[in-house]
Length: 76
Image (cartoon, rainbow, N blue to C red; front, side, top):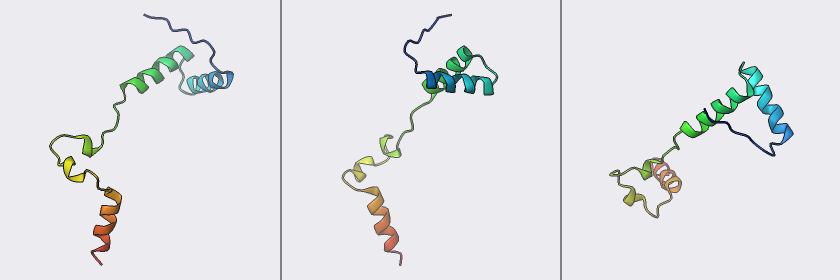
């Protein structure tokens, strides 16, 4: 298993990390591993406009918020 040394970690950040580890009943090393794993395993959210085949080209240059507002106003 690899070893990670962190230099220059601000004292306040260390205190917060230690408090979180204690709260979660983990060692500081376990808490760091958990947090890094969570951060790296999280998939970025994708916009529906980033997906293929859904007509994103139809929305090019259109402000979606303004479009929805106009549509809603037309219902009155």
